[in-house]
Length: 125
Image (cartoon, rainbow, N blue to C red):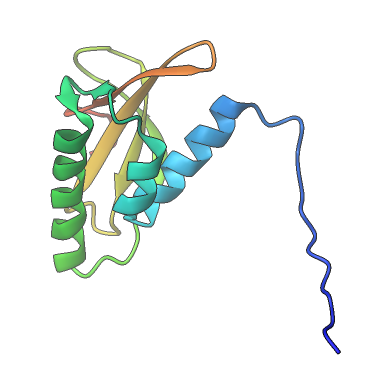
C-alpha cells in the first residue's frame, strides 16, 4: 500500500518579486552557484555592458579563483560605491581573507531589474 506525504509549502505574500529575486541573487553568489545565477538572468539582457554569457564567464572566473584559494562560499555585506555611482549601495561578496572579492550594484526600475553593474571600487577594502 502506497503512503502519501504532505509537503508543507510556505508563502510569504509580503515579499515582493524584487526582494525574492535579490535574495536568490545573493544566495547564488554566496554559494558560488553559476547554474543558479544563469537561471536568474534573462538570455537577451545586457549586464554590466556585456551579454549574459560574457557576464557569467567573468563571474565564473572569480568563483574559480575563490575556490582555488579554498573558499567554499562567499560572505556578503552591504558597502557603497566610491567612484562611478558614489554612495550607491553595492552587494560586496568576499572570502574570509578578502583576498578575492566581487561587488555588484543592482539597478531596478520599480520591480524590474535593469542592470547588474560590477563595482570596482567599493568601500570596505
